[in-house]
Image 1: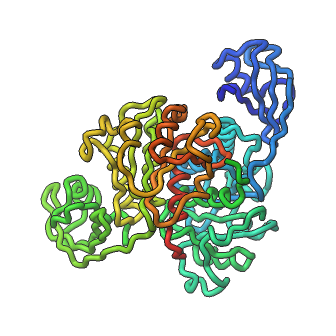
Image 2: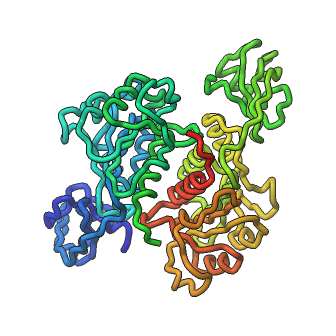
Length: 254
Length: 254
């Protein structure tokens, strides 16, 4: 399967979406009769044959429908404050998609240095990483088009933690639990993650969450966790968190 | 401790190395009497006071010597074929240093698309990531100045696997073990890593190792491992490998 012959078509409509069609026809110069692979982002691959290429358009015929088994258990949701430098968030989005996760939310926190995330750009990165790593599922990007609580690609911390959420909820922060004065123990994330349980983990901005934000999260059923002794940048903390959740939930296939 | 007041001085000679001195004097405009923090890269922090700044030079007096306890067990050695695009290797070097590892080697493999690694540049990234993440130890970068077997920052695969090496040795590859026709089972890396045991893991280039290279490694005491079901880019595979080794060897401190 040639990597560049993978295309994303959420509708599987018989004609490639505009950008994918341009790539197929103008960049790869694929022609009628060529075989391509489609992914709908919802768990199915399709083997297809190009039936016509006209200008920037490319239509195809499905030859084979290949539903995929999920590669991991549970539901991996990472909610992070975007970094000041956007390329670090974009890097995270690519790597997390390769490793495998289910849902991404961007938090607008008290100490956030960035107040705008370009949703379309992040979505493009998720799609290209999904194609590159041959994933049948596209991570869900929570954004303005999905919820009115999202402004500029982000949701206010308070609004996010007040949302109903199934499964385990954790907040990573660098405070000593004594400084928080409530909400029980602080654990190593790797020690408390549970396989097959939907899990949401919050990662703060460069300046960490505020103590008030941590307290508010604990009041709303989140538990304090640490990623260990290493001092990690925001995007690195987010990635190792996704990787830990993936390790706990992965199906043991060599 | 202000992050930008951390400086790397392997000799702790009483005067900052040229580049560090330039950063201190010309960029940060630090002056006599200012407090700075030094790291020697060999496990010790130092609290120091600037005693003089002349031109591009900066001398200091050690006020306090703070030897650090190692944050993880064992010895984490990652040997990888550098990626075609250098920024991906540089990104890996930064992130792996943040997460924590001990040694880095670059392999010249049959399917390698890159034949040159700029050692000085990688070394600078290791140093800045070490400073940024407040690590007392600098990862060892194997390079031409350390061994005549290194050319252009890399060592030939065959030469590397023939070197005497303490502890466990693994090679990550995408072949089915049947295709290799020797060397026993293929395991998930996470299942066979052992705490406190020096460990070396080999990560191949974009086109993977050749079957001949895998067989040669197995003959030399390496074991076949998989990172799981996800299809990862070379630099992503290298990073999740370092993270797995860190998780197995980390001291359980919240």
